[in-house]
Amino acid sequence: MTDTPSPLPALPAESHTAFEAEPDVRTAAFFAVLGQPVPLCSQAALRQLETQAAATLPPHTLMARAGWAAAQFLRERLAHAEAGAAAQPVWIVVGPGNNGGDALVMATELHRTGVPVQVCLPQPVQASDARWAWAAAQAVGVPFNAALPERLPAASWLVDGLFGIGLARPLEGVFAALAQRLTHHAQHHGRVLALDIPSGLSCDTGQTIGEDSAPGHAVRATCTLTFLAAKPGLFMASGRDHAGTVYVAPLGVDPALAADTAPAPSPLQLNAPALFVPLRAPREHASHKGRFGSLAVIGGDTGLCGAPILAARAALFAGAGKVHVVLLGNGAPAYDPLHPELMLHAAGDLALEPLSALALGCGMGQRARARRLLREALALDVPKLLDADALNLLTQDPALAARVAQRAADGDPCVLTPHPLEAARLLGTDTATVQRDRLAAAWALVERFACVIVLKGSGTVIAAPDGRCAVNPTGGAALASGGTGDVLGGLIGALLAQGLPRYEAALAGVYLHGLAADTLSAEGAGPAGLTAGELAPRVRMLMNRLFYPVARPD
Image (cartoon, rainbow, N blue to C red; front, side):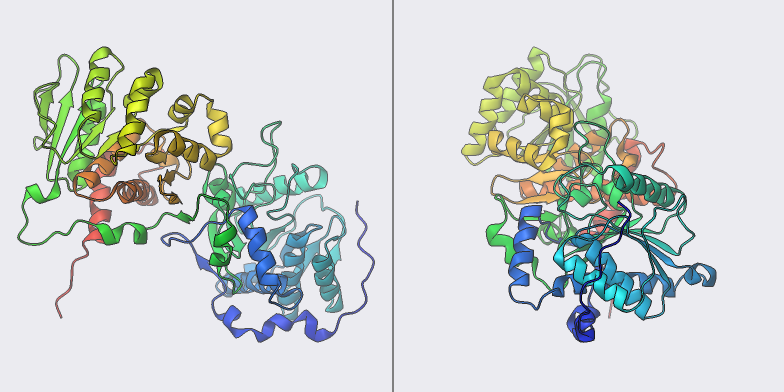
């Protein structure tokens, strides 16, 4: 359809701009979320939040606030743009629902303050709030065009205001074509802003809507201004690629209002240093290595010694007082020439009982010796991390899996760190099912094992049996190389050895692991070609900055 809606009765001028009288909203409209433990709200929680907020506010207030925040977001960026770019219009594509209404308010506010805008309205707006916003835009002379241009115009910014969190069907027809064009522009020119969520993306899972049945379409933006609260789908699966840099405009509404009605378990947060730094082990001058724990990394079947060595080196750099490596295979090295600080042992030669923590599975193999050693380790009253082949052994041996769950019931939960394929094996399903809803998969693993779960991948999910859960925002394609998972296991193991609780050790290890990859990539060492061994030294630097900043003398 290319027709535009019939005009609505004119609204009083003050109703078009009522949001301008809210200085509290204007002064703190949005903030970048990386580094802050912001709550993540599901679609159901957001709907409840909208309902509760709307019940106490005048009509159209939330839409007016969202549109003003979006306009202010671009005004700030245009103020710092080159003169030629700033003079180009903002091109806004508007959908038929309330997301389109947000975009229309944005267009109205930009137009009223002298920023040139062009609005593409491929279908008439339908939602009542959106029709109010359309009438307001008409009243101030915002220029509209119903026809889809053959190519996107030169613009200072392109704005995706097509669909928000309520979209249930795949993008089709003109909307799919617009998503493809916006994506192409973002990839080649940048400056594409998505309002609330990139159109076509699930706010709960980060999957493209309709991706299960056919290749789906969703906008890839360079940044997303999301309203009321952050959504988990912006940080998981494909969501991180589609959303770009994420900012939140809370619109003067506290997301905690929806906490009582959010689907259990809750709350869900974005992982950030504030969640784990307060529990760091102190590093006083009068310290010795015994205060920072002893870790044993157990694995290394014949031909697989590299994995536990990588993990153990990472544990050294993460501050463990003493690090042992137990190698199961034949022909294992006597010591690590790069890091002779590591103490290498053959299986059975090291007493595990006195140690502070164990990390099992890296290159461990799945032979009888590995199975026996895992069974013996599970009987010990020390924090344990299970990765790689240790997880595969649980899949093969129901008695071992039951033992893990029983130990958790007895107050000794493990930390399990599966990648999606390992998670699928543990759950008796396939990788596609795990990736389709990563939060659901993580909670299914928690329910089965009553352990802290680290479901690795884009937007690693960290979930605990007590209901706490976080999605990690750091890391990316630079981690897509062999051995990076072993490094993560060593990092978390070292933090367990230093006395961090299991959930916080997992949060810290995952965050620092990803942040190390991000900072190295920013310096040109990634995303292509970054090796696992390069991560640990950078983790050490980041951890010291976060955990132990040097105090300056007065």
